[in-house]
Image 1 (cartoon, one colour):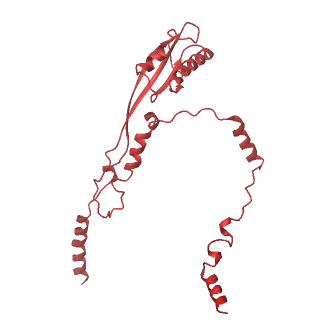
Image 2: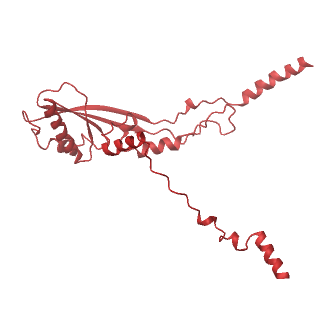
Image 3: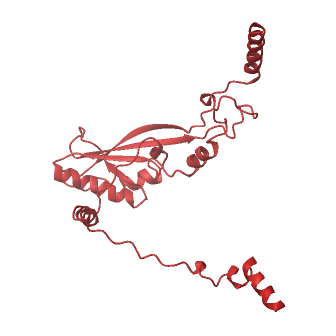
Length: 228
């Protein structure tokens, strides 16, 4: 009897496995694709100063579309540390007038009285959504459906202001010193603002709808009083 059962179980198992289609999420990852390219632009400063040799150089770059607000822009300036910082700040202020935020580039070799702008431009390609490549019937492999994550990925790709942020995050600016140190000092000295005293909810009082005789006990009492 055991031999006959085993002979029946094996064909049934093979038949059931043939009915269930194996599907892997790797077939439809529904991920955003970000492609980018970086260009470099050379700017010239007046010798020994933080003044650009051509005052409208930044304006021309913006109006011609060589720099856009969605680009990832870095600035590297030549000169002693103090002068290089002033030159970087001058370019950053000019770019900020057009809504373009620039970050200081790590130390690199820059010709004297020059600055190098690194411009990273990225484009987002949305996933092929909706994606119903997996069979719509029951999934016996406990895998996610092919359309899983399509809406989230598509919305992110459509709403991101700077596609470069999908590649790497931006450098955080300096934190506010006073709130940061105050929070640490309060924590170390065990000084915490007490939680507010809980108050009774107005909906928990007996003057609600149920307390006006709408419930069964109140209705029963009213009925009994009417018969006396």
